[in-house]
Length: 428
Image 1 (cartoon, rainbow, N blue to C red):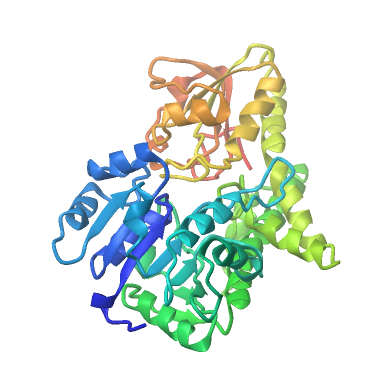
Image 2: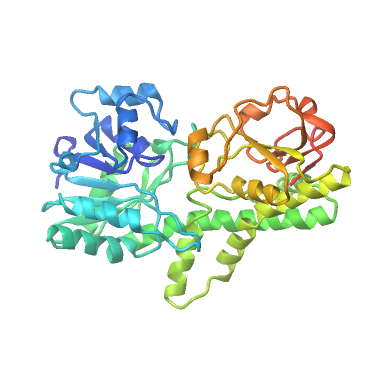
């Protein structure tokens, strides 16, 4: 298969935070079909607006209107039939027991298998444990299509490196790992991504190496944040400001500048469980990886308990206390609420019988209601609270008048450590 752009018609399967930005970038140089089973999502995108805010209306509308290349957004399977490169960007979550859910990946593979032809290439971007592409996805492609892997069709794996909400490190500005099921396909996949990724690419020697590289990126971050979260718990007992300690330690050139906080989202809060699952399948119990995840998963309860202690210290009646939680998304300046650990803080505060209001100008209130069964408030002006918990460091929170929002003896707990220290009662 030639890498010449005129010979490529790319289908991107899954148009969320990862798939849409990628599809838009490819659409500037190739003919692209953006496919998603969510009909409402397709209709909204065709109207020229991305609710995730990862792609601006201007950029989206520009590729929708291109004549030579451009993008067609669809939920119709028939639109995939004449594509020859399929890129899968569906989510890979975990269940309530933190076991990997590969269902979206399998369903996407079944969809592609129904239109797969000789010479086609299927590239997976979804985060998985090593071996999923060849052991779980390829058999589905073969069964549905009736074609043979590495004879009739080929595969690649290029892990997504999208950073939701980050307008600096966008998809083209982050170096991309690539791989192929044969050396020739590896070069083809690498060249394809290299045609749009200005930061360049790294061609891994195999699909499994590329899969493993992705899953350890976030496991490494998770472990480092867990270490700092543990330090925060220790320094809290020693009455030492954790952020002051980290600032001092960061004066050394090789100190890693991680900060304590709530660690959720669709990557860092999930990926370590994928690696742990595979490790246990081959007979190894990953102690450090799972210990780090357990500690980070416990931080919501820890934060809520610290707020409770501050309220008791200030002689605030806990039952029915009015509490404001600032932020419900999983990270700052981003509408993504998937796997947010802010919800753990909310639930624990509710378990303490507090009256909790959530204010987040970035989050979609309908999505929050659907996903977590809680309502959010649209305005907090003129209200007074016994406690304010700054859970997400949205820029929009920096200008709030916290003194006006607090009742007498009210407390302000800063999870993120980004508010002026003289305004907060305590920070993590």
